Amino acid sequence: MPVFFSLAAQYENMGDETINALLVREISQRSELIALRHGVPEWYVDNILATPELDKSRIRFVDSPTRFIRDIGIAVISQQQSVFFTSCGDVTPQGETWLRDGMLVALQHLPSLRMATAGMSMSRLSQSREMLLRTAVRRGGKLTVRDARTQSMLMSAGISTSLLPDLAFLLPTVSSTPKDLLVLSFRQAAAVKTESLLDSLTQFVRVASDWGLSTLVTWQVEHDAPYCRYLAERLNVRAEGIEPRERFRFDRMCGIYDRASLVLSNRLHVLLVAASRGALPFPLIHESEVKVRAVFEGMGLEGNILQPSDSPMRINWNPSKEPFESLPLVRCFERNAIQLRAFFDELFGNPQFET
Image (cartoon, rainbow, N blue to C red; front, side, top):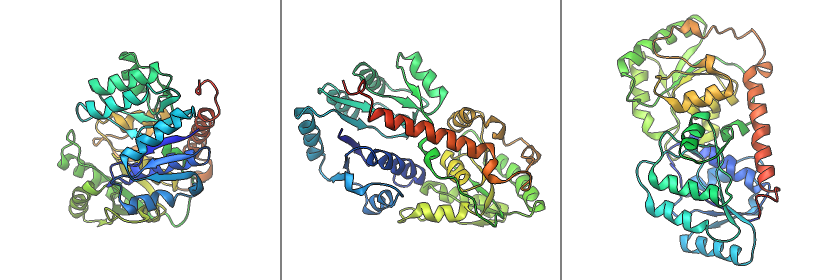
């Protein structure tokens, strides 16, 4: 079953790179993947291909969009059951995208070609995107979302989806020592005043020091860097992040997270990647920041969600309380990874999808 996927993404965002790499890995382990890399930086392709357990022999890159569409046509003419995946993660439309969505609607009318999504989320639905998703459901596509809020919003529009965890749960859970850091990472949120956030973070930094932890402000999204540096300067703590277009930046970020005991952030993939490296993740978010909240509620970790007005004592952290391997968080990763792999196994082996 040929699978078609475009590598185009927000290249500055390491979180998007991480879940796209995991998607490519899972597909390559089960099927042939034809990946459009038109306009995609070489360093980004290198980072995708560096993913452990990815089967490079089953990936064919196509540089031309015209050739990509031609390959889809060849697969359909030869009556091969085919799938095209759209981007995973947050795909909230920033406006109407009739040309892009209209083209994807047209492709779905080709025989034996179906659309699939792997744990997307969105906070609003444009008319063009609604048209696309309605067509996908009607044509037998496999649509999955990563949180109940997105599922409910789409259901109210008559679009049926299944729940699937965020692809970051496919990351292996590891832990190393020493763990001597409180890691902070924040995007500037319109709903949260910076001074209010700084007042809150000052308390967390003070308590972390009492617990024997140093504080580091970091970032894994390029446009977060100026804001994070500003927070670090005001808090009088160290700042260190990745270069915006760095090869193998995932390993560099893991080197930071490996030392983290606790991580506070309003970035979902900062929290999840750090958690996979043994840090306890605490979303510090405004009530309006529904994306992170919805995922943590789905994980059964709503008790970890903090608001800027909360006391650091809400964390109730004790590093000697129980070993990392037995934490509920690790069991959550294992449970979600099983569900994700089952989704891909069914997708590529389910005859009902192939009709």
